[in-house]
Length: 167
Ligand SMILES: [Zn+2]
Image (cartoon, rainbow, N blue to C red; front, top):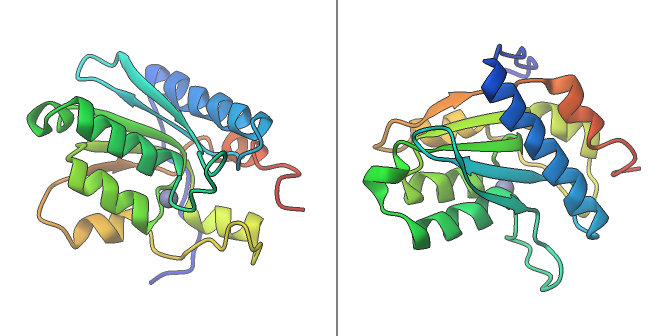
């Protein structure tokens, strides 16, 4: 696996607006005492279906990453042929667990801000977020469904969200 940081990828204006919204959700999560991560789901027409903050608190749910919580909720609300036309936007690259959740839910596309590589640089060995080193593309490549991935994107802005969070 290459240790080179992946380069930021271009977005449409609409995609950039949606991704920036996940940065706002991530900041909101932090004001609620959680880690600064956020995600949202858009439908086939680009309309926002749901938003999700990191959800460690109040239940101390260590699996409460924003994307995993969103995937679980999306799976309860919608069926797979529809979800295959949906896009999950995430302030940071989905970890192996979240990528697995996205895969099993059947969400067809992922757009993320901060790469796992860059997040790991920011969090270091912080006990609250021992970032893994397994890109979501690698997880998806091991599966039997096509999941389109766009990212990292707007990485400077995505990184700003984490300022002071892991000091
Ligand atoms: Zn995760």
